[in-house]
Image (cartoon, rainbow, N blue to C red; front, side, top):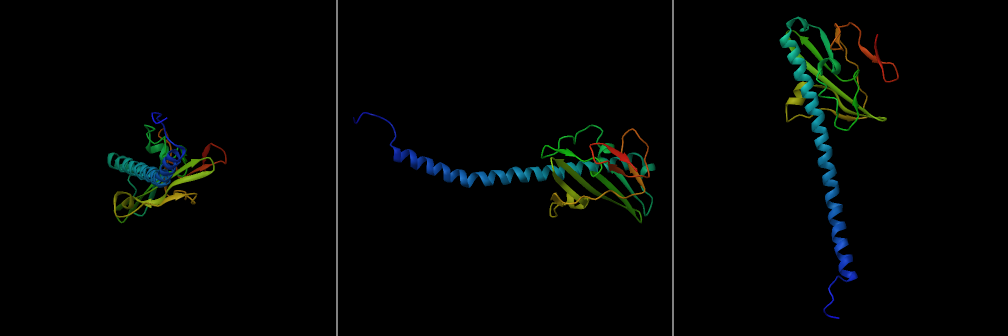
Length: 181
């Protein structure tokens, strides 16, 4: 019987034990890498929104806020190409809580951005944060999970690509539709 080839039960169990240990070490690292990539995707989406708002203002000086004024650009106004229709966690960005707030403080223009993704009953994204935190690698944006999001406050609200600006912010009616007022 010396010519028979195969593995003994002990060899198979030892192999399975080694594979199990490797899996215990590898799986958490892979999950961590996937989560970090999703977090980076939120930051990149927020950067895109800020860049789109900056472009809107530079290409149309009439919409630049006057000194001491805030204006709000909602996601549906800025993202005409629907490039941001696929958030990192497979949910949907809330249109009434995803925006760029542009502020003119004594001639200095600043940008704050918020992205709120809804997937089932879970809310994820970036809480209202300054664009300087997004573009400065030494700082981190406020990535959140189920944290309260804030409405954009401003004098003018740009909420629809086909509409004129409004003095009334966008709100959710409790369902899947939105209204102004």
